[in-house]
Amino acid sequence: MGCCRLLSKPVCMPLWRRQYSVPATYFHPTVYALSTPSNQHSAIAILRISGTHSKYILEQLAPGKHVLPRKPMLRTLSDPKTSTFIDEALVLYFPQPKTFTGEELVELHLHGGKAIIKAALKSIQELRSEERDIRMAMPGEFSRRAFQNGKMDLLKLESINKMIHSDTEIQRLSALHSDEILLKFQRWRQEIIDQMAKLTAIIDFGEDIESEDIEAIIKAVNDKLLTLHTQITRFVTKLDRMSVLNDGIKLTLLGEPNSGKSSLINEISHDEVAIVSNIPGTTRDSIDVVMDINGFKCILTDTAGIRQGTSDAIEIKGIDRSKKKSLESNLVVLVIDASKPNIDEQFFDFINNQLAEKPLVVVLNKSDLITSDQLAQLKANFEAKLNALKVHTVSCLTKQGLDSLVETLTDNFKHISATEDEDPIAVSDRVKEILQTDLLYGLDQFFEHKDQDILIACEALRIASDGIGKITGENIDVEEVLDVVFSKFCIGK
Image (cartoon, rainbow, N blue to C red; front, side, top):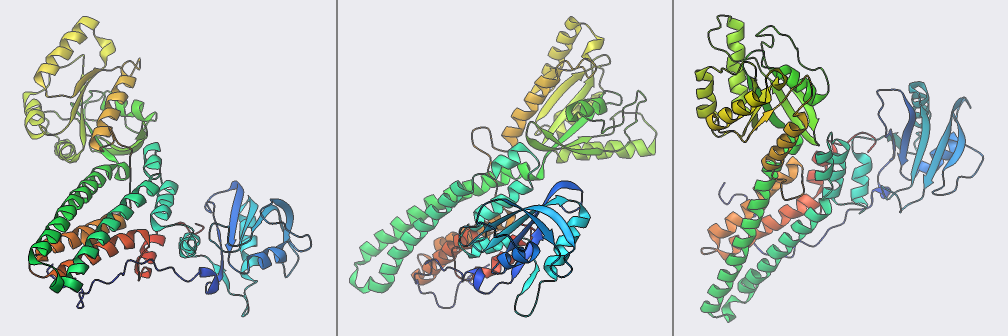
């Protein structure tokens, strides 16, 4: 990318000083939105209001009795203009600044009927006037105000959004480490700032420093930043591996027709999501099922049965797609009918050659149809013949071996996602991009220019430092990232 990213005036000034935004209270309208799902009936619906006119809105909807701060109170809500009854609601009033947004905040806990919600929203909307700017909140606007009023940093807010959208236990846990990650980023930034200070001393007082001392300072700075670069690179690599926690681990079931793949997927998912039939070739194409296996999000693919000699054009295409799916997956499960274990040699060649680098788990299905001695011999044969992580004996009819299989799958998921010995962590795509395009880029530019132009090298470190500021929100010109962050939030968050 060259040096065009570097500023035209490469002077190392203390630009890392935190810049606080003007509190949102002073220039934002009062906003309101439903904080609970709006597309279905429910027992309760929560309507949130934030801004300087929040208490006024509450007093108009529920006139008469005084509402005490932070105390739930039952009130009759009615339309301020027509006095038409809306609902008996639990109301809460939170005076600023000790609220989620840092502003005056009201919550209306309504009954969850759609007509009730619609009437309440309409009544609030009609309170808008030239003197009182009241409107519906935009996506993430409550959280944005919390950030602007110093209630939370961007990492914490993004982790809350991840928790809201988590489907599995591992996804939930991965969103709980924002404080730990923030401390890591702050340590990195402080390290960069410390090294910038040393370079600034050379720039400002270089004439008074011996050349040998300058070389020693630059070498010490370089060594520190090399260590930091290694730490950041490892962290980014770990994030890449852990990205499957959100995207889903791709798990493909392979096997000959009628080996019981569809039955197995139904047992693992505890639901009938795949077609089960004793007619070979019933599954003619791949069937993807998103499921939670021991807290891990998995995209489990039930593929068309692989067999040689078929003349059915549709089935042949399905077999080709099955092989392609297995090559794209993170983990392959080979399902074999224990009562008919004669697998085509070409199928074996495909597994041992093209899938040699893929983690492989072998399942001897329908184990209830043969004796235990036959099963033991069969298991030994396949352990010798295939480079499998483990060979399991399973019966979908009796449920034997299913728990052990799920345990093996879970162990593999931990290895694939790098969560064997570490807690799961997750950050947004925005953060990952900044780590690459600002932080690592700035360090790389320092290494490139440190021996030729100390000014440019110092400016490169400022880019790296400001990159971390973009992540946490502790930086000048932070507005550029806010729209990206909060557009992904719910309306009432």
